[in-house]
Structure formats: C-alpha cells, structure tokens
Length: 178
Image (cartoon, rainbow, N blue to C red; front, side, top):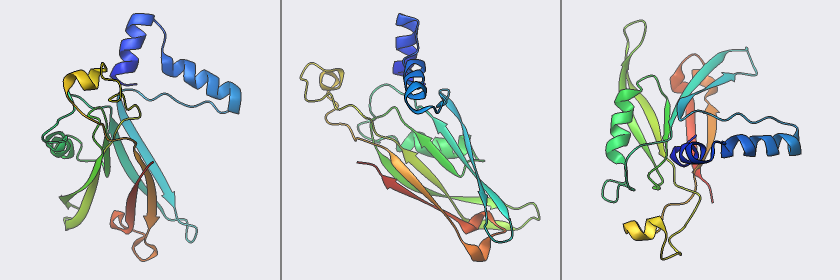
C-alpha cells in the first residue's frame, strides 16, 4: 500500500490492490499478498550441502516526503534509514520517483565481541512506473519535476560456499529493471 492506494481507498472505499489481487488469483490460482505501507521480508537461505541455513533481512517502506527530492535525490532519507533500521541487510524505499542504489558500510560487533567492519548494507531507492510528464497538465509537470526515473530492481542473492557460517558469505546484486 502506498499513498495513492490509501487516497483511492479513502475516497472510493475500495482498495485497488485488493481488486488487483483478486483478479490475479482468479487468473492464476495464486493468491498474492498485499503488503502494508512498511514491513519486513526475510529470506531464508539453505545450502544444498550440509543443510546450513542463513537469513537475510529486507526492510521496505513506501517512502515519505513531498515532491521528488530534486537536489538530494533522496540520499538524506537513505542515510537516515540505515540508522533507523540497523537490523536490515537491505533497505528498499520508494515514493520519490528517483531510482538508485547505494552501498552503505556499517560497523557491527558479533555476539562473541568480534568487530565486523566489512559489512555493507544495500540501499535501494525505487523509481516509478508511470511517466506522466508527456502530459503538460500532469501533476509532475505542474510541479516542475521533469521526467521520473522508471522501474525498480531485481535482486540476485549469492552465497559464498567458503563462508557459509557468516552473513558476510552472502552477496546481493541489484539489477535495474527496464
């Protein structure tokens, strides 16, 4: 759910995402889940050899702010996010109609008191899926925002076989969508 979906729900008293998930369920037999405005996704990784397990946490938030952050492109919010959600390996936000990824180093202490300085948190700022700038009367055009960054990211998760007991053995690659 995002701000547009909440606005539609408040004015029309029906959730467009619930309608979409019902149509998808009828067509495919699979019932998609509608996530709230903010939440967590936890990836459970299991090695084929040895059955060792690891997890990776992704914090998502629809995003906040008025406008599209024309100067900072959302980097101030991204830096705040790293502090707000220290348990997240990946932070994913939207709303600003800018798309970028940033690797943000973090310093942690293990349960055994070992300093971990080689960890990095992946920050993903998602673009949008509607380019309304071609319409001279659109909200984006009236606000002077210009063309938005389109699309999001696919995530590829790799596990280093040599470091299967540590989170450092997990590598994540974010690939931009078309």
